[in-house]
Image 1: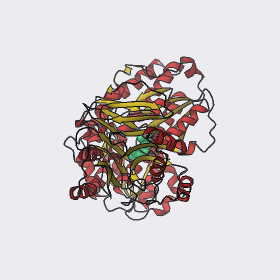
Image 2: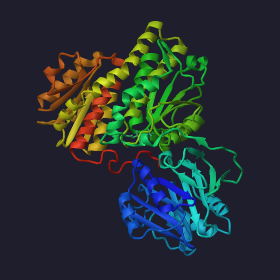
Image 3: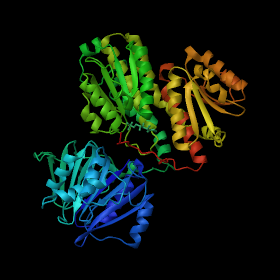
Image 4: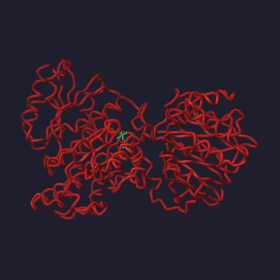
Length: 607
Ligand code: F6R
């Protein structure tokens, strides 16, 4: 969601900025633009749509200059048009800004600026910042940015350049991410590491409430108030190759195939036979023993991972657990108390809804454990303890490998708490440990059935509506399967507990309606089969996902996808994979943009 790239150094800035924006495309966007210091002024080029459109504009009129900033915009205030694309300038075009996030009080600021004679050319909140910085400038760009930021309320990252200081970029972070890259006699700035990897490994994360000022020779970091900050760059190990597709048609498919390795990696060094060693958590045994309530907060796929977690914590630990959408938690006046454990789950660690909920949970006295995939992410800074998922960079907007890793981390966390509370017997611990160790192999087997799953997907290509059902842990999994399908195939789908169908939704099931059912939970198997029979009786076309040794399933459903037998508790991990592959193949057969579905962004940095 919105990408930022900046460059200052001896090279032509436009191609470097453009390439950086391309590396951030995976975040999702709907227009792009850049500004370059050219001669004594600023040249701005922008275009609605994909970066290819901006590239086409540049090929006719390429600005020449060695300092530039660029942006990919995901529309919030005003539609994705050329004029709403960033960068935005003041009226004299002597200042240009790009901005991620939202300025909440932009309407008041805009009214004030209009009164002073400013004419706005866009509908964005961002434009107010360009005018404000211009008005406050008195020979010192940092000071002007500081004054402008003082007036702005919101969560954002802001980058500013001016023709008055043609060798200088100033940026500010208020929640939305910013990373500085250090080159030889050149400097880079971006909203994400992938944009910088081809230029440098030496990077510095700018933290909330900080300002950075770049020239070709280096970076000066201070608080926004101007207090100096002494921080050295660190070497980032991610390689460019990891950000490429590695022979697969889409990042999503590549990431699905990476899952066996991701699970193995997530478990590595954290489990030894029956013993879990989560040395990254700092809570005490007493805290675990006294624990009476767990909260899980997250959005989207991460929330679905939390639905699995709830059943683990309640089932294994008998601790009441609530899973609350992060955007709802904030406004629900939650009954979080000191001594509660709050688990915030976020692949990116930058989802603003989750960050804000996590902050609130901490203010209320909860102990915050973050489960995230991105080292150094904002959520990890917020948290008392962070457990990393080790899924590696996830590029496809539709999350797959991060989901399974988030689920697996919760098994480890449940075992760690059980160990400390001494409520799990040695036998339980051993059984749980060996169940986890089987998961990478089980995933390998399912991925080997990809062709068969692709054939089943053919039966869904023309569907209008698809229903997903399951019970208990199977219900948690179908929630994720349904989201995966709708976000990349654009087919409407709904997931529900199998028992709920007959309370209303069954009215929509008619001849040929596709229903996907997951059947891995022995305790509710027969009841779920009853629901299958109810939909079959109305003519539904049923796809069943069950264990390889389930010899009843064929009798009730039209298509069977089999997964290796694991303990029921662990079934969400293997059962998620055929659902991911099903969604992938349906979207592929429909010829859609799988890695960047319309209207969506990888990292949702607005509330
Ligand atoms: C769907 C998907 C989203 C994210 C959600 C939260 O495939 O990826 O639903 O799960 O936007 O993102 P994170 O986990 O980064 O907080």
